[in-house]
Image (cartoon, rainbow, N blue to C red):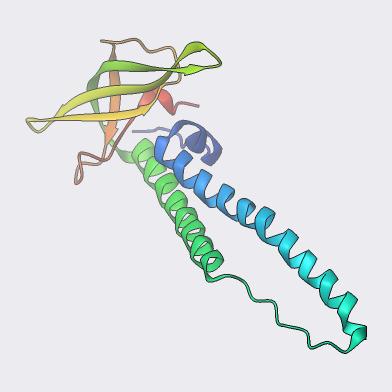
Length: 165
């Protein structure tokens, strides 16, 4: 099993869970920045304007929701790191078995259909498994594929063809 690791960026672009974790970890802090920064700046401008008048100045306090959302973003970042590690572990030392593409679900983008999600199945130790992943093209319904899985947790699997460098 002399396989090479895909890059972390290649994993994030191709793996559904990595995309979800990355979106939450990046978009949530940016949204908080966009919505919190203007109120902070306005508050500071108001404080500087009234500082010379002798009016008592209230303290600026960050809403508690911001801390909760930042915590969620941090957990998503940790989830992203763990998922990238799992995919790299599977590409390096996962059990290689044969699977079959069951279906390809089409999505729509700007009024035209485009492939989005691929459903595939495989059998390991007499038990049938079914999973979904992002479809990248070049694979058709009914095609045989190589599935890399964790022998201790057979539901933890990826399609090798999607992560080749």
